[in-house]
Amino acid sequence: MPVTPFHLGPGMLLKSLAHDRFSFLTFGISQVIMDLQPLFAMLTGIGPIHGSTHTYAGATLIAPIAAVISKLLVGPMLVYWNRNFEGPDWLGQFYTQVSAPVLLGSAFIGTYSHIFLDSMMHADMQPFFPLDYANSLLSLTDAYSLHIYCFALGIVGIIVYGALRFVRGK
Ligand SMILES: [Zn+2]
Image (cartoon, rainbow, N blue to C red; front, side):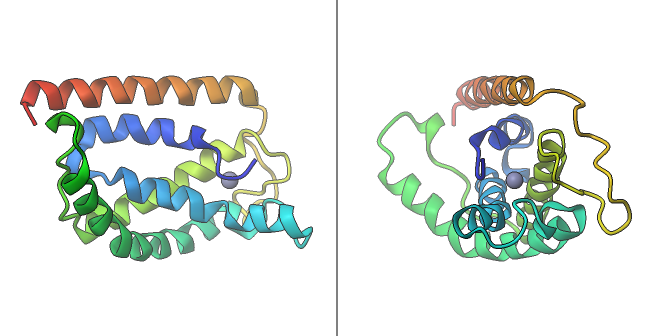
């Protein structure tokens, strides 16, 4: 299913460890962009479900696009959040000046991790196309377990992130 939130779990853990050196919003935006083509194929019946977007080559091209879109969205979204969030400081007040290397790096981590995780679930993927037509990661684990792992990483990430910000008092 396109745009499944399980992709966000590992990203949340990475955010908890890297803080301002990683943009979780950019990571999330890249997940959505990656799954636009499968969503289109599902809705229209045009093209394969996991086409060229679900290859490492496709992910390499999509990451800079995701970074540019994020550049337009992330700053204003964080400013809005910081202004309007009324909960505790450690759940708000995000750093809003996200640099270009952080945007680009987060987008690449987003698109490549998307391919890596999807490769274990979708038999129609050819992640290394055009170099290799096989999907060697398929059946490394089952989809249910993969979702559990990703969910668990997300929970750990939220706990670590909240705990570190709470301890630091911001
Ligand atoms: Zn996907």
